[in-house]
Image 1 (tube, helix red, strand yellow):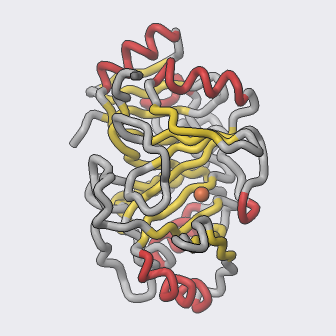
Image 2 (cartoon, protein in one colour):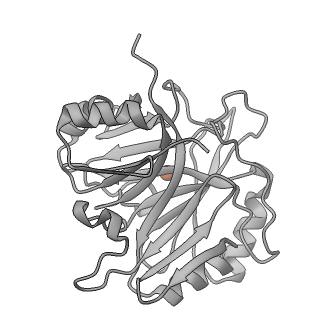
Amino acid sequence: MAMPSPLLDLAGITLEVNHLPRGIRFYTQVLGLELLHQDGAQGVAHFRVNGAQTLTLWKPVTRQANDPRLAPLRARGASHLHYAWQIQPDDLDRSKALLDEQGIPWTEIDLGTPERPDPTVYFFDPFGHGLELRGVDLSDERQPTYPPVPARRPAHALPVMGLREVALAFSDYAAMKARLPRAYGFAYAKEQPDRDFAQFTLGPAPEPDGNGTPRRWLYAWDPQVGLADMFGGDHALVQFYADVAEVLALVRAEGLPHVLEEGRLAVRDPEGHVFEFLPPL
Ligand SMILES: [Fe+2]
């Protein structure tokens, strides 16, 4: 048996955008997220997803760090990131109608089986980030540290409850597969037989099957175009809840560049991603 993973849950993602007002418009109007903070000069917009998760947009500006704290790690927002939102399965039809009303093309794929369908909807934001709406069963016993709750969003907005997964690209897939558990403690769950695609459960123990569970996931791929033309993100910035002291010990042993400030640990992965580990709420 492997040690329990120090990872607790997915806390947030940061996306690179080339136009902040357009990003704010999309994420408030289409997703109904609450804008917590914006700073045009800093190139930052920060949104609340739910009580435990956030989404952040960074517009890169020359000779300037979006977050000076992370400047030593040369952190950027993710480019062309595939990530997923949790919704209630009953909300999928309404979500498709809402996307139609907003003029956003979408693709539906059934990720389940004939006995247990798992219809999933994919679409893109204005910056090439690939979004997914994934139904989760709120009564499933496999719950994350911060379980999703039904969302109260404006009538025109998608009824998203929480962030479900983030998919990152790694050019050296084999090194990634060894490094993510060793250097950070991610719980390796499984990989696909036909392509380089590894799945990590964001929780203390790996889960064999992601379908239906409200748990959160990290996917790690080689640079491939996956389902619904989705890319894994490059130079992603992703936030996780974790036992920070435990992750810090692993990161130090690995010798990775990191910043520790006010109990938050940020680490630059050799592939250029920056992972931030936050203490539990
Ligand atoms: Fe996905």
